[in-house]
Length: 336
Ligand SMILES: [Zn+2]
Image (cartoon, rainbow, N blue to C red; front, side, top):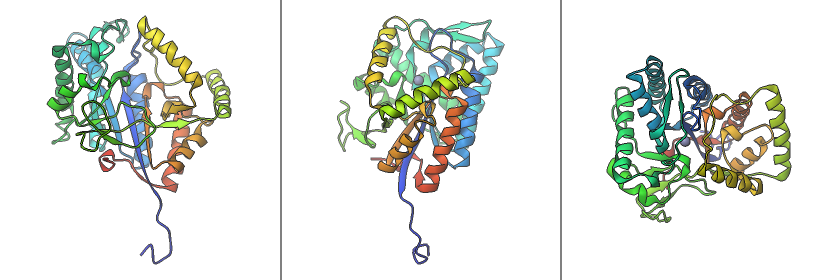
């Protein structure tokens, strides 16, 4: 019918909106309301307006610690209850919910007077630093907790995907046994300029690999765009639009040198990962151009880092994208 009338079908684009649902990972975690609940609720509203499905990676070791703290501290128990409620609402709204493991949460200290956490021991920052027993306990505990929260509202729920804390999925041999044991087939940890692909236990691209990678996209940025962005960020900072969260990031000791190295690399970089918290009015055309020239795009989003400005520009991106293209947001329909 549409064709008879002469109208042209829209071009199809595969777009994944993935979220790291977590507090800050430094000496002050920030509050559950400002880092997680409020900014996530705002993003859920935007997604709902466009009938978009998202993938949430839940910082499960934080939640395991929060649940435990709740047995002795009423405010922690109240936070756990609120977070579990939001996760259930997301499940009911049709979003995907999967584990995201930051192992150094195991050494976090609860700050009773603030109802926040202090993460100062980074010896377990990398999954590689854990022994077999600790690894199994973290994966098993994470999956049990998600099942406990989600199964009552979504019978048949299965956590089939994973994102590594700090994006460090390699060496994949550290993860492969637990992927197999717990039925995880899809990984979302890599930042790469390519569409989804299958991979083997050595992380080599291979159609018969048995696992699939859904990379976070890398958007090219011109020097001019970077300059404009720097000016804009200064203006937003002065205006007080500094992001939702009230915690501090993970920078200490060994981590500090890694962070400095990252900053140096970032200066020279001509691309950046597609992130809602990095999307500004200055970068909007680059993000739209990326969608024009690529059929696959994955955004990452850290709700704790979102400013009002980011959310407004993201909504503009959504409006243009959904008007111009036929957008598929269900990653299960993008399997390589
Ligand atoms: Zn994370």
